[in-house]
Length: 417
Ligand code: ADE
Image (cartoon, rainbow, N blue to C red; front, side, top):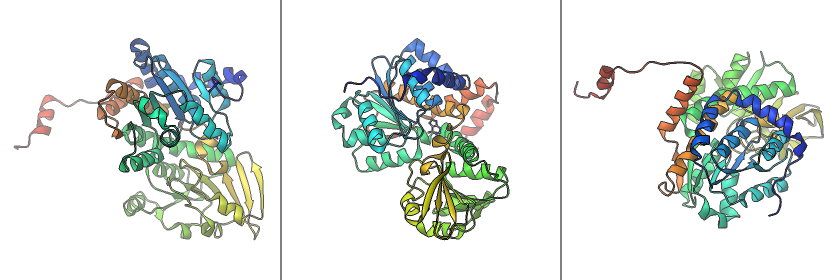
């Protein structure tokens, strides 16, 4: 490996720096952690490889970890979410980065390999590509890795599969499953950023439209809740009977995707699965239907099926691909079916990523503090970390809450009556 970094244009750094300043001012928890890390330098001598969506909030996380003494290496977790100016700012600040917007599959893979060749002691992954590469192609690097953190639902699913097969080599902290992650980032973050991206790309009204949401996990709940708030009629498609009941009691219609297909004006996939909207659904959709994906990978809306059915195809607007079907119906796919909120937007709001990235930073610290004591496998974020992040946010925004009286404390533990 020769290159110190692989990015589009270092000259873009000043614009990236301004973006990072904007989010830093709105991430008080991470600011406090950065100050603590500057004092204690807990990551001194450690190389931390981060495979994340490389936009401003992530850049600030990288800088906070660097302030703790780490050599930080940044690589993209999605070829369309990289912001070239932000990556340039990282390099200008001494963070080795391997990413550019619009990387091909081969370039994306090459960037990951370059990052892994930096010999990570700790990793932060979003979606599991880094862990997968380490275990499949770069096994010589495995013994050095103390552990890592996973940001998202899809990554946790992949890690659990590895754990079940007994092949996961080091401990991974399931940051996605902490309360301060999924309750806020998955629900309110996705809910807001997905609609922000859809509205800025299409410039269409949502009120009075039929919005079909496939998947009613925490992200799907957020997308559906915000669609309702915008005045849409929301239809939920689910495979899980408990979640389907939840959607019904939250006031939504529930039906199979085949029934929803002719009704929808907007379709949003948030399942984490493959081939969710496919040929049989496209054939039934009405002219003008908008298709967007908010799941980690671009496999939820079948692009091969769209290509097969289309008689013509063109760019209708930036980030909007128009597919004309045989009977002149047009279907519009946003952001190539990639995570719409990051590929056609800036991701979740800074105040929300402050919580998620504070969990990441503190989970890395937990791994360092407990080096050699945590078994390989998928581990929950300790609840003290989760609660500290929640308390730090309340403190930062000046909200105080009640505390139990000693008698109430005693009452809660008294089982004798
Ligand atoms: N910004 C950085 N990482 C993100 C993520 N996983 N989801 C939304 N916005 C982000």
